[in-house]
Each structure stands twice: as C-alpha cells, then as structure tokens.
Length: 150
Image (cartoon, rainbow, N blue to C red; front, side, top):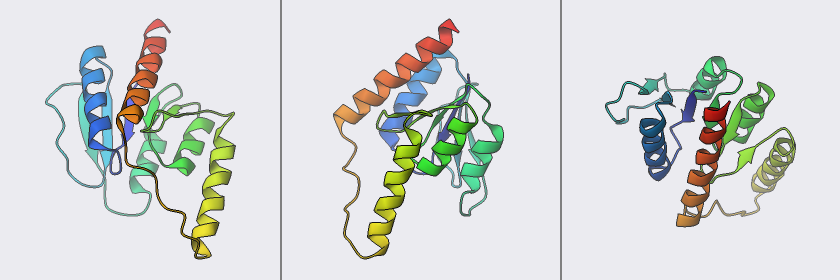
C-alpha cells in the first residue's frame, strides 16, 4: 500500500502526522501538489509537483493510485472516483470514505453548493482541532496496521 496525499489543501499538522507514519512504517508517501513544499529527506517520502490548473493534482493521483492504496483528500468528488477504483480514502479530519457513505457525502456537498450558489451563507468547515488530528491519526494507524497484516 502506497500513500498519496492531495497536498495543496492538506493541513500542515496532518502532513506532519503522515511524515511520522511513513518514517515509522517505511510506506511510500507521495505528496501531490501544484506548488513546492518541503518534505523530510527520506527515501520513501517525496513531493510530486504538477502543473498549475484545475484538477491537475487530482488527475495525477487518479492516474497513479492503485487498488488498495491509501489517499488522503478532502475533495469529495476525487474521493468518490478513488473509492470506485478500490482505493482507501481518508479525509484530513479522520473520516474514511467508503462505497457505503460516499454517495451521501457527494449529495450533501452538491446540496451545500446549490445553497451557496443561491446566495445562502453556509459558513465553512470549522478549523482543524485537536480532536480532528487525533481521529485522523487513529484512523491512519488502523489502516496501516491492517495493511501490515495483509
């Protein structure tokens, strides 16, 4: 199992958790972004910088991720495509997207977009808190442990 990160919007705290997990497990961790960022100097951690543009990073992840790989993203349409490819998808707040819940998440996303487009102020996501980071780390550890047994 390789780990792919939709890194442009991934919070720094989540990247740090991922760096530590990759160093601990030896799993290949690839951050895909359209801008430069620093990553630890480790053979199994790399940055794949792609061109600027709408969905360029998403499309790169879609083309490279294999069934069973883990992808970290908050992008629900990307998550839906990856779940359909049999990838494991975890959002930065620790929610695991599955074939059972992704359709509902897509519907809610589209509903909220319709509200915003009609002028309704929906607010944004709450800032990433300690509980979010703990949930993410716990889910990540669970997925890595499962991959280690498989």
